[in-house]
Length: 474
Image 1 (spheres, rainbow, N blue to C red):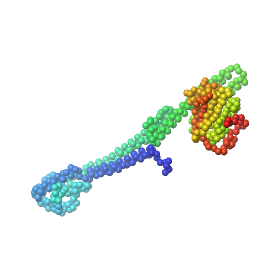
Image 2: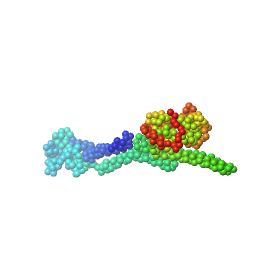
Image 3: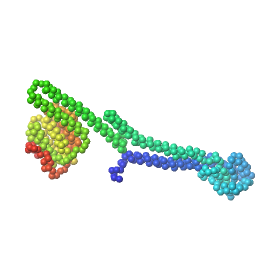
Image 4: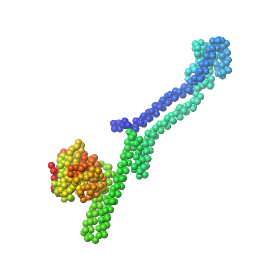
């Protein structure tokens, strides 16, 4: 068995093992102690019977001491009135102490005498020898055991109790323990699953189950985490649908107004094309954000050189925004390699770069810098757009959040930073924002990759179709 297959210290295996071991030991103890007690009750004379026989022996001894054979004869005569079985008094040499001699049958019985402390088997009425309490060597009382003294009067009843009822009760207690240990938590899990089926996604399990250190506790915590994830996903999708429908109303309204206006065909085509492009971009970004939030399949990763990726993105950004290349600066060294998915990381960095350009003033500088931090690369991209309020540093990553009133720019749908954050998080990284000296600084923490001799191969994959005009700043 492998080490990983062994149950942990808080495993449910140990609880079940302890419960079953305790049950087995209890049954063994019950079989031994209770069986021994019932054996004494069913095979040995009771204390009352022993006391009666001892009293008879004391009376026989007294009769012998007072009247010898005549006294013993009187004692035996009185015993025949009290007991129906055979009664005799013998000496140490197994001779009768009465005036009546023993016959052959009685002598034969004397060879199979039992003591009062011997087990009694229910095979006829045994003959018992009870020594004189004062002087056992003087003689003994021999008596055919009266039937009323036979043990085991309730033998069948106690056998049923011992072999049937008592084990059944303890087995029932074991079933109750197993039910409380296993079935009750499973019933709670089933109730939560039924609540999900009824669209009650806010239902959570009790802390009594989630705080258990065993496998059922882990399962309960996984259920709660899955419930939170499901509730968050549904809430995000509903919010995206509401926001998307709201965002689409404005371009649709403008299209309706344009279609009813008297403007020329060229202007109408230009307006329709612009509005359709905006709606298409809005729908694509919304679908991509929803996919990033719900998709959990690991993305294929590879070694990525940040400097080469920046050159490609900055060249495209300069072409789209008409910014001079000197305003997009990269201070990251060529040894900055990270591990991630190229397409997802490129889109995340491109969204962050476009956001910085959109909110920077004319002539502003957008700068990318970074340092190695253990197994990660800590990168930051800073613009000169004046920054935002401290309470909005987290809100900018929420979908459809736009703070155009606090920063100059030409607007947008408010999805770029949300897509960037989700894309980076899917690669094991993180994104956060803070205000820099002159603008907003967006931080990226990416998994580092030590790569040697791959600069040319990776750069060839990102080589633009035209000559790149934006170079890195040393």
